[in-house]
Image (cartoon, rainbow, N blue to C red; front, side, top):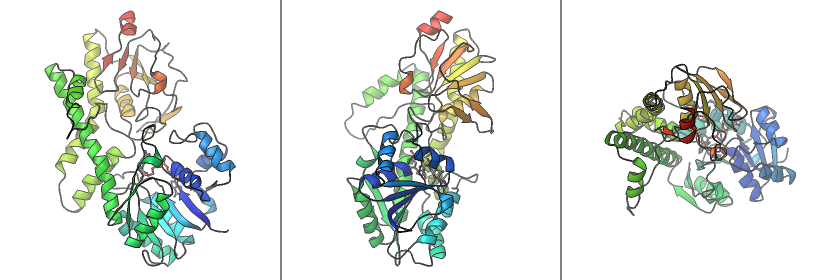
Length: 423
Ligand SMILES: NC(=O)c1ccc[n+]([C@@H]2O[C@H](COP(=O)([O-])OP(=O)(O)OC[C@H]3O[C@@H](n4cnc5c(N)ncnc54)[C@H](O)[C@@H]3O)[C@@H](O)[C@H]2O)c1
């Protein structure tokens, strides 16, 4: 097969926008994924195949124009000038990372790697992963040397699914190379897709930048959740405090209280941060505390709901609860590390729980149990509704005729008339 301009391995939340951006920049792109179902969904433009990060129509246009071709990883990775790796980096059971998907993709790319090619790692990785774990695999399989025969660089993806103000192409990208020339080669490739590329000295510096950005968010999210608890204890409105603090024009960045931070990136990166510190014999007490606050937040949310129900003469125990929204943030189909799911699991300890989420027809819980979502916010069998992820579709909830508690801020708020009517 003739070499294409770029191969993107992994066509999920980050790989698909990358493949479309490269195709949009005029490159001939092949997207490869190990999930036959994912490849079929894209090839057939199944509704939702853009995963909320790109419009389904953009996939249709790229495929129809022949700029993007999708194929199953079982058919191999084709030769290309640029190999972009957008593979998952899930945390493993020991506080580190499962590098299985990335190393298997490196083996596949190593088979077809040629002198002068670029391998660009876009996954979020603990410090040192590209240089110490991935470069050796690529070198062993290809027989070529990173930085000499082929270019190797790391440019972790920045993306905020559903954020219309900051789309994939408008976000500056940070890149570090195995050598300076590797970084320059990666910068040329990335510049075709984004307005600004920021070079750092090494692949490790790029990895650390990414996990620091996300850890910064986790620490601030945990701080604002702790502020929420303090405000409750003093009878102060946290929203008012945040509005007031937000008038400070320097040194303050507003975060919103929530039932906890989720998703692939924010809590996972903080774990990579803490794990990386431990591997060097260091402590990271601030990050550890932020992680602990975040992990406790779903249980705190349910505890506060229990209290709110108790003061209204109701009980959670034995209640039939409908949870609205289970994704980690609104208007994305991603349920990974979702605090809404953690709340749902916590509720199941004492209540009969069903859920409705327009983005998630089926949900697998941490104990392996599968739940099928209700097709609509039908409350015929519910005593209580718990709003967790405020999707746009939930903005104008009709009077459901049962108590509705908005728990998305971690501090249950009785939504009023429906509750009054049912009480
Ligand atoms: N999702 C986000 O919002 C986000 C944001 C920034 C960074 N990241 C990071 O980007 C990386 C990728 O995350 P994602 O959200 O795109 O993951 P994803 O799970 O949405 O997509 C990964 C895709 O790779 C495929 N895959 C797995 N192993 C493969 C293999 N060996 N060969 C080919 N395909 C394979 C999977 O089938 C899947 O479709 C992770 O490191 C993540 O932390 C994610």
